[in-house]
Image (cartoon, rainbow, N blue to C red):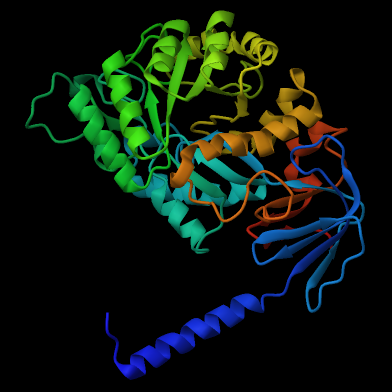
Length: 444
């Protein structure tokens, strides 16, 4: 493109000014902190951490000075990486279930945007969104127009006819080629595809929207009406088509699954992330390990935080599924499969405030160190399966190290000794930083 001389001069001057402004951004020095680096159990005591722009540039126990920078005295608190939730629903988490029946995409999106800021203020600086049209919210967060976590969006979760995520009314079938799309399919909150050609096209459409990985449903679900838990969804050929398209985009498929049969078929097809898996046997979990498949499981139980459904059939399915939670965690740990942390909170903004409490529940099966490592560096490893589709590749996530993103939490206390500190982030997280920007500072 040939620009007029005066336009070229203006462009160069603006570029030079922007570069100078970036170069002159004062560094931040966090002093007097004990660092959990996301990987090692032993804290780096009496450490100093330097942040330049949005990256960590030094972690040292030596004295450091930053000319013209901001100094934050950690007062002996624990500095840790921002938390990561790899089974989050930006839109579903904070919208009542009734909105799916009576609302529209504007209401859903506004609630999702408002909930995103609250997610960040609970210390979750990154999420993998495994279902919903969160693309606009992600873009606005990345541009700094609204506050929220980093989002790796899967886009609308894909269901077969009569599968999980087919929430259409009973009268929606039989269909004919002239029917218009159901509203929630048309606006990308959910998606449906049947048969290999439709699977291929729908997958490509969702990657075109900006998905970092695909989310599909390969088995029966709790919150949907027409799919019993024992039903395996999608044929092997259809599942292979999902995986093949994802691989052409150099990324992977995550699938909602519960039972042995559904999980084993998904593994054969090449699915790399099993979401839930509460009804699996030990043999299937061992098969996951042998095929390097991740288990993205949630600490769900029929307890004070149990999900409630208007439909009594869904409520019974919830009980049936959560009866398998304890076995799944214990067996996964014994077998040595890769386990990631997520919450899967649905249709309840008040319950979403318990996001950190869900993480703390892992102490039933893991040590505090194992819990914190899972929600930081281990979860970040799962996010890296998105390869070049991963939108945050300038730095590392889930760790405190040189070259990592400055996504940080300063905890009043030591969560390696008392994991319950993370259950109450509003009282115990004195500093929350994402991408080098401070969003909360209760130290003054």
